[in-house]
Length: 134
Image (cartoon, rainbow, N blue to C red; front, side, top):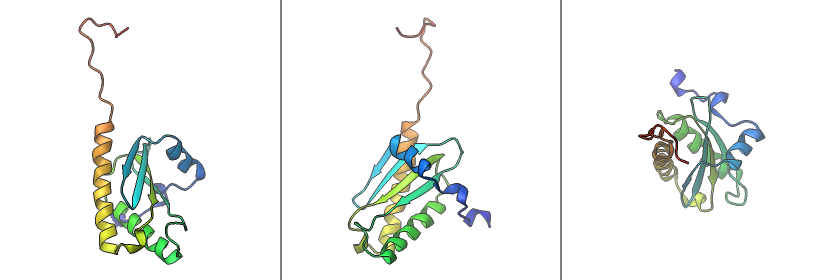
C-alpha cells in the first residue's frame, strides 16, 4: 500500500524549499492554465509544492479541487526524477472539468520528464591531446 501514499517527504513544506526553486529554476513547463517550475534535488525522489492564488481561482472550493487533482496526478507518476517542483495555477482553471485537468497534468508531467532528460549534462568527452580547452 506504500505506492499509494503521499508522505510529507514528497512535499515542499518550508518557505526556503519554495525559494530554492523560484531562485534557481532549471526547467520550465508552461501551459495556458499551469506553469511548472523545477530544479534538481539530491533526495532521489520528486517533491511538489502548489501555488494557487485567489486572483486566478476565486473560491476555495475551486482551488482545493484543482490542488487535489495536481496531488493525485503527481502521486501516480512512477518515473519522476529527483526534482523539486512547483505547480502554479493560471487563469481559466475554473472552466476546466476534472477530466481535462487530469489529462492536462499528465501531459505536463511527461513533458517535465522529457525536459529533465534533455537538460541532463552529459559528461564531456576527453580531448584527444589530453589537455583541456584553453
